[in-house]
Image (cartoon, rainbow, N blue to C red):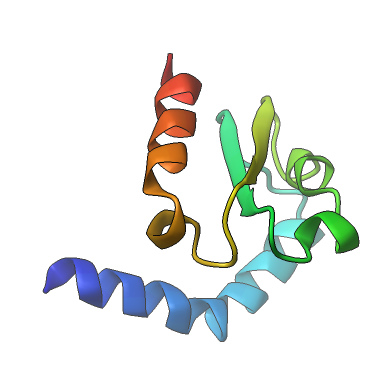
Length: 92
C-alpha cells in the first residue's frame, strides 16, 4: 500500500507542484549533484521530439548516462529485464 501511495503522489505532483518547483530550480540555477540514469521508451516520441541526455545534462552537475529501452511509455511494465540490466550496469 505505501508503494502505491508513493506512485500516486508522484503522478499527482507531476501535474501540480512539480512545475512550480522546476521553475524555481531553473530560475535559481539549482542542479542535481549526482550521476543520473535516464531511460525512455524506444516506441514513443521522445527520440523524435527531444535529446533526453542533453536535456538532463543541463539539470545536473555530474555525468548523465542513458538510452532508449525497447518499450512504449510503460518501460518497467513492458521490459523489466532491460530496465534491471541498465540499472545494474549504471550502478557498477
